[in-house]
View 1: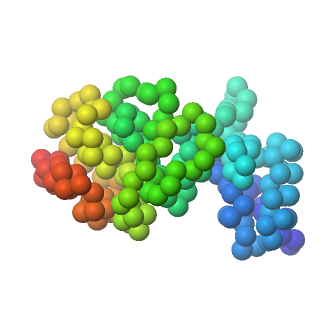
View 2 (view 1 turned 60 degrees about the vertical axis):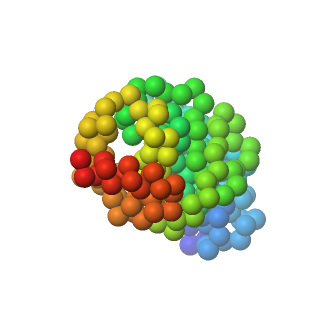
Length: 198
């Protein structure tokens, strides 16, 4: 099987909405082959190009192609930087607010990605977020705690109940969040302990 065929097969087997970059295929082909294959698949309609070097397998609904939202593009563009919702976006993604901000805010460790329109990035220095392998909802939880529940529209007991639900469903790992919280401002770990013991 050629390198091009391997790339095409991997994309064909991927779920709709999956993001791909050139780096995802460098083990099986040269950068030139990967770039030309992704570009060709985009022109053919098998991939949607979100920005330079970032593609998505399209989602098809009964109404046609579904475009990827700015938040999903930002999360994919910041891969490797422990990206996740921050500010009002964090509260909304956790189901703690009904408000959906017109411009999503994404927290990243280190420098923010460039050329991602319609998204506000905030930079964080806690590299433990990356080391712990935090997922976007886990980042959102830390961000809500960093903001002292500022964007939350429910009571603290309701926040604690929602947190227990997210942990029970496997959407949030208590172990990973506790590990990263130790390297956040002290109030984050204290509030996390308080909510988990409520």
